[in-house]
Length: 94
Image 1 (tube, rainbow, N blue to C red):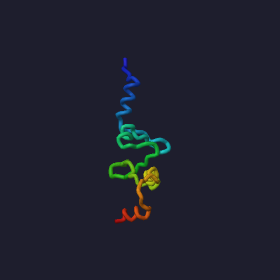
Image 2: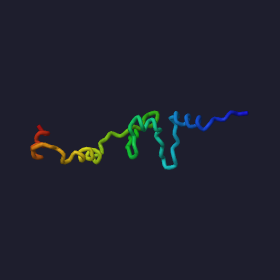
Image 3: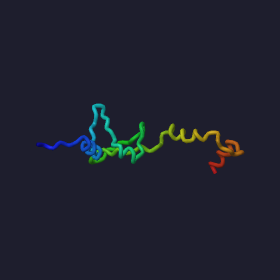
Image 4: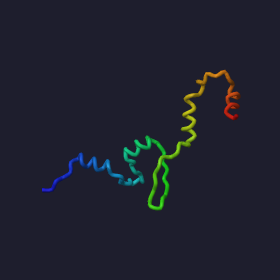
């Protein structure tokens, strides 16, 4: 009689594996523990670098102009300073 693995054993083996299949569209699922560790969310960008022995996939640096602008937009108009925009700009240039 051959012992078969339970569904639980199969799930654990898949979760601990670093090997993933490439789909017909060329997509690969990044394991959850890596997504969590490197803060990869839906629509996060990653960079592919060719190495001598394979491909390195790493999170893209946050240089997207829209993303940077959105961080400032939430603070627009809330400053409580009695200065003109030109005065504030001049302070940043000094």
